[in-house]
Length: 187
Image (cartoon, rainbow, N blue to C red; front, top):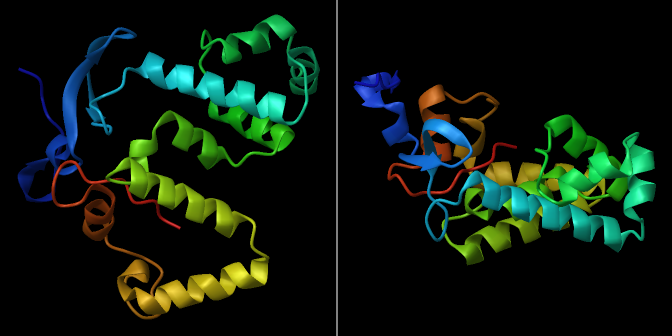
């Protein structure tokens, strides 16, 4: 029998986090995932969306595969594996690609797993649209917006003057009380 990880109140972490046991052709053992809008996508499907995002981002800035590979310090063949979903993209490579191609790393995460941004496709799209708008605001406006949102939603900072939240509050915000709720991103 598989041992389950447990959080406060002896509620299995998997249940509290809204995770379900599934399998994936890339992994020999069972894994736990959160369901997307149309069920659980295989990891390879997310890799395909990441590849499509990278291809579009490269073309949008007018670089050839060879030019981008040179800027990354890679051979064209090695970089091509990312655009063909053959090689897995590491976070450090994601950061490097976002520096060169000018996209925000969360845009790539959204392309791969939009269900992390909302409970419905429409809600997720609204979340990423709002984030993109915020990313383009001047720093003083962002600061004022953070203050305004803090005032509108006192729980977002754990109470007046506090910037820390309890672990149970963070888990509840991230995973919701019911298992299919969306991941809430901390600021």
